[in-house]
Image 1 (spheres, helix red, strand yellow):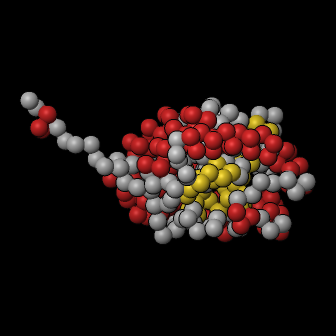
Image 2 (tube, rainbow, N blue to C red):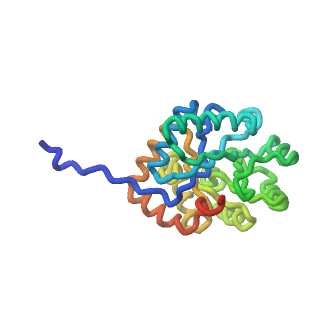
Image 3 (cartoon, rainbow, N blue to C red):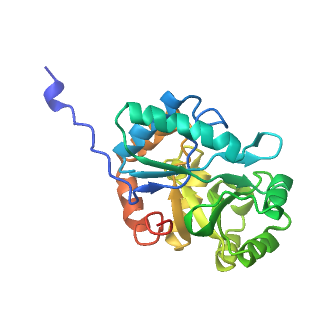
Length: 247
């Protein structure tokens, strides 16, 4: 009898972009989706947020996920087959998320980098410390005609006490990509605070879900029903390039 007084769940706000450039939905090759079926389930949830195009970013890391085209493309084809079976025509491409390590240096030397359209490349720092050669690497990538994007800078805790480093990297030509999961508070209050600081400073070039599993999807679902999400999307809309950079 009291159901009349219960408030209805808030309708989720749509993302301010329709292209996700950072997610782990290529099945069975890293710590993301384990099967084509679970990957397709995640993609269907992403479509509910307004995602119409996906550029998946499997991990490429030394001794852990040494992925290349020969591991990624067959797995991606299995995902596309599952989506086709469901009548889902979403456009799913792939690039990679490259940890800055010796494997990345070797792939770069061999001209064996899986770029995004228009020569963007997604790189990832160690979570323990900044790579000693990061500034030189950013310069070298640009000399090669590549456009580096730093994945989830808000998650590197060694920057939290010196946020001026973000602007230094941005001014050096390194685009910054924050995670929706950070804005959702999934990783913690510090990461959420820094992600919003980067928005306030106008330093965010891209956003990504960094979606790996259903727990991540649940967190994003809940976040998109908050007034904070609406404010974040309004602030991000004029600065992020997800919809334009990869045409």
